[in-house]
Length: 139
Image (cartoon, rainbow, N blue to C red):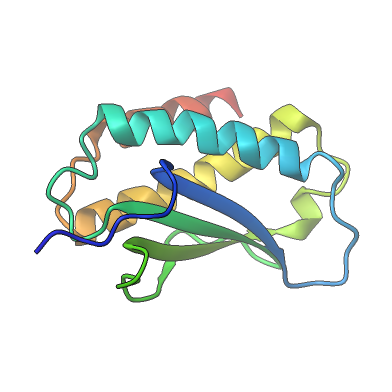
């Protein structure tokens, strides 16, 4: 059965959620938009969503006190067709970071989540693994 489709054309949604009372970095929103646009293109180019049990992916970047290596999952949303993932990043590493530093941090975390989910749902992840390697090399 084909998964439900979102009410928009996006294949990736990324949002930031604070788990602490720390003041958010003013560049966070811009960095998340950059990451979403870049990774959405990779998802499309890699055929990640072809024949997947979900039609798009949402990732909540959780501003917390640790760096997760793999995401937490929620069940696939039957109404909107998304696979909701969340992954925690250490807020202490975000305070005072530049847009480029935030972008690299968010991109690495989102890629870890997508790769983990890709393995779980038997999706092609080679392009994402290579992007993570390049992101880690640049950091």
